[in-house]
Length: 381
Image 1 (cartoon, rainbow, N blue to C red):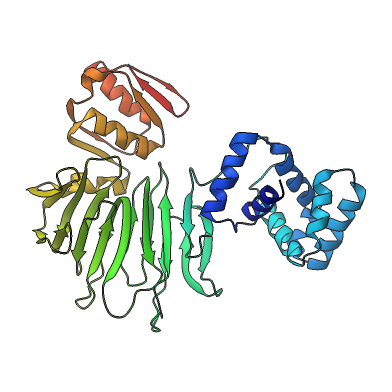
Image 2: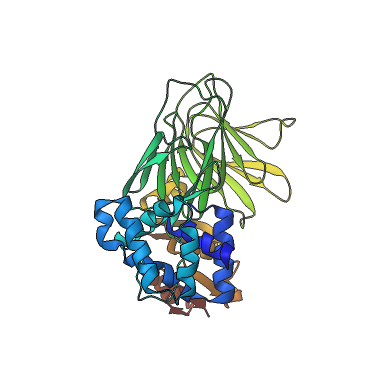
């Protein structure tokens, strides 16, 4: 339990790494032990009334007083051990502040781990930071320097005249049901779709390539720089090379192909360094078949592939199976398809930023595909 308690403290103080987060989540799923977790919250409540003053001495005294009054509690005896370390004051100061902001309630018996449905930023050292869409915060590096600012659905990294000694990466992850805008230090704009993540340098080197790593879907407006080519590396080892251009990349692991749709400029698609690059022109889509390991191109209407940035859903000659995947990501739901007759049938449809019921009713009224919906679970019949 000692290690679990440390993980709980790290979680509450927003200093937990992704690996530690997964470990804590697994512990909770297996043990269902909310008592230990809630005891930490109760102890924190004792210092909540002085958190607005951020007085370290008062916080320490309040903690000690709470422990004296409740020696019978196992959890407080463990807290007493932690008080041997000076860092405990800082830890519980953070817990109190987080509680004060309304993140937790001592009435709930359920722990929700935000890795599943919140936007997260993973730092170079593995620490995971939750990005609140309704908030504003400064992004700090390991030295405590401000490297970026987040406000609402946008995160902007600041440029620097000083060249970094080495590349330091952050990774932004957007869960199902959400979208997010990211501006890199060179001015490149990346719009991330639901269920996507982008790994990128906090600051690029002044020479050489600008390389990022994408899983999922993103629209990129790349800042022009003839001396530093911009490379999007996908999970299937397809490299997308540009100097300055606007294009959409769809690279979800569950899809059979990676698709690149060019809106403006020129894009080179290359499977490996020894292969010749396939050059895309505006208005064309390049599709990389992961099984066949080949690239095909064809002209397309680009708006169909970029409509997701406005919250719209546009399907053109798309199988029901693939449509359901997009609906799951867009609405953050789980869909079970029992209507195998229509699974590979292709459909054309347009939807605005509408509830999932509107979309399901379209297929029901037009094609007779019935459904049931319970919370975030849908069954097609």
